[in-house]
Image 1 (tube, rainbow, N blue to C red):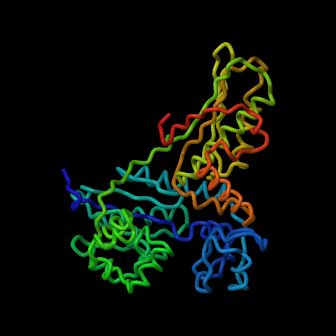
Image 2: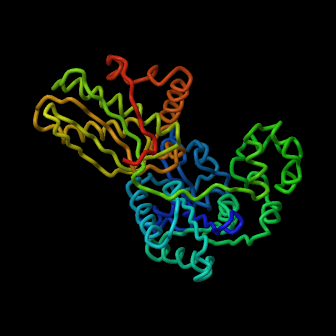
Image 3: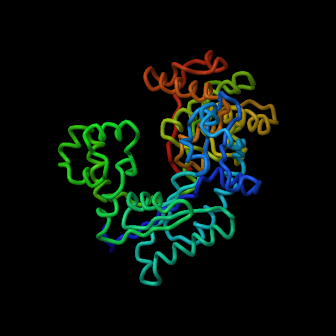
Length: 398
């Protein structure tokens, strides 16, 4: 058995993934400042190259401001099918070569190599895997290696762009201590600003503060931040399974062929599942629609899609799949929807919208649902339905 201090964890992250995929399609973009998103002034920056970051541009920034900061930037629209395609290729390479791995977003992975150093050096092994991914996809990728997920993730950030870094056992606190506090996961802009007002800029200062003080200041999150700053992280690498799903279904009191009712129920269910995904910061890349006829014959129709958690995208897909599926015009007793192949990445809602207004609309609707209840905000097509209780099985294998 291996103790927590004996683990070997690698964090791999594709560098400016969306920009890099665009550059594969068009080499003219190489070495130039690139913004991925809508060219409309109402749009937002979904991703940007390192060359653009030098001008102060960052993701989620309004495109109008980004163009003002970096007028020579080339703007390209996102190609979400290509992002999903390359993400799946890289996942397959890692799956074929790694005993245990966790896919935390479409471009980020944790690998547990504990015990593999008995056969060969883990750092060399990770280097060879990185080379394999680069050779087979043409995409730049960085990795960090240490005894836990936090230190490895920070090491990857220090290795970028297109680099690698190992933090040896016993040097975790020293490595982290020299960095700015905003390099620690969980420390966002607000927390970073609060710490700066207290004179805390380097991680070393945070390491030396009493944990009780941080807890009084930031609550339970403060304890987690203090532990991360000190290189303490016992969280495991959770084996990735593309079968993780969220689903719901509705059995009717009376079997029906009412197409308007069936579509309305389907839309309402899809809308609720989308909200559930965004609440848990997940994206799906596979949608399945299920129907059961009055004679209990059950049929499903499934489609792989680009990663998303947006209502209007998934509602359109669920209705299209239902129309493909429902050919017999028999009475229906049940309909269901399932989203599978889930990954973390709710922030990427920005990628799937052209306008800042649409993003803000989603955020406002979700805030209202969280405050007043999921049934209080819904599309007009579903508003006339009687109140229903849906049962989404989050992350359950099915």
